[in-house]
Image (tube, rainbow, N blue to C red; front, side, top):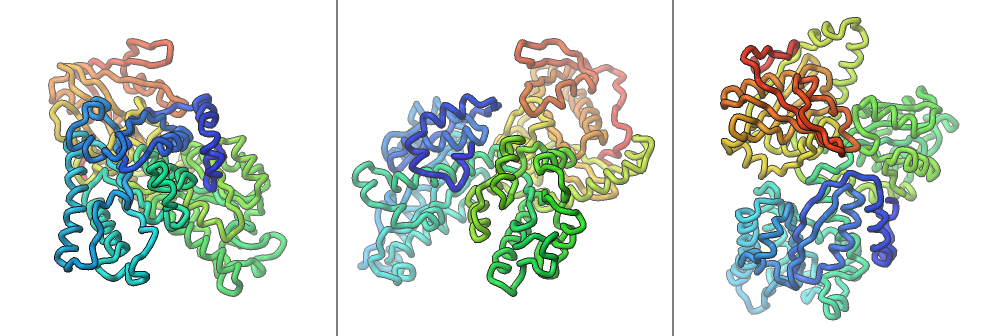
Length: 593
């Protein structure tokens, strides 16, 4: 919904939240349901109400638990039965500098200030430890915004007695804990409040009148930001950028003005702004964002513009370049098909409002109102399309993987026989039980995979670790590499044992390795492990969504029999493991590296 895209009108969202919620729930969307406990050191009701809008828009239907006013610590430490029975999927601790119990006094020694800091950190350290042991779910914790006044002026940031200094030190302690603990995430309200404007954010009226730790109009900014963390945890991030060229990546129209007259580079102030934007986009590759071009242009002119000597982005930085006179909506749809991605995985960036609207309405693709070029970075960055919660090694080399896929497609086109093509790839697979080095990637894949995902189950890293350490499950991951490169972990299978039956909880695979025999290799290893565990029957499940129709008959392909299908299309399949089971994989050399 466009009203919920940054930059949004906070007053409008607060005023119309009920009608917006109604519209969101009426949309034909397959929501994932999540229980979110909001433990506040201040009033949180409106925060939950606005956060719900953003989460619904991101495909997550939340159910909230809210603690009583300022009871965030007591609810956890004293096992509030309501919270225990709620069984949260995620816990958000909404505290602020109003919850710092005592600031340093000018009369305190350095040792006393350090002791105060230790006590404040220990207060939260114990809280987080109890949540981890009792609830085993992701935690989102606010850090602290700066105080709304500085007793010592500028020295407040350097003197050990200053509140600014104290908050900086406490925030660094929080950050250190986050670096050392998976499934623990900081909501950086210190940055948010600065970007919003600290004086407006920390208006004391709202605290003394309503016990809100921030102004009412700042609530949508906070709620949007925490929703971005949640949707990232559950694999709802966007994956790719589709970028216009003229007056988007550079100033001017390359076909009319010529390459030499484009505004890009150090010679003019506007050229510097476009260069800064290109540099920002190039950095997105480092977090796994796939860069593509979607431009109405002659391809020759587009390539010439991208080869501008002062340009930061070059043709090689893009996976797909669509520069022609077809509608951009068609080009983006074709681009998605080539990359085996859904159109809604893209963010379309174009300076032309008409083009943005056409793409939005025809493809349901997000296209932000980017404003003038000076605003491009701020709008895309604050939108949180690519919020990082866990950054895996596969993310860093995702663009490289897609380039290798393009090389594979080119090679495939040169073969008349598909089997000969697969042989030519010289594929090697590693298929094993879950290993610590891949836990982040396994959890990430379970949350990001939508098309090749038979049950749409989502797992946190903590849940993956629990499964890996349990004898009640059979768990395997699959890596695939070939002569063009390493695809990384591309498939995950989880089944839980029920006597001599294995019930499949999860079977997912990255679409970038479709039709390469990896699904057969995973099946072979699953059967082998099931046999060793005394399993006689593997029971598979398919739960239909708008995105996973491609695997509707996957189990039939694997040799399973359909035993039940209900009115909603949910299917149950069974595979009786034969004594003479013959491996299905023909082209991948498995576990021989």
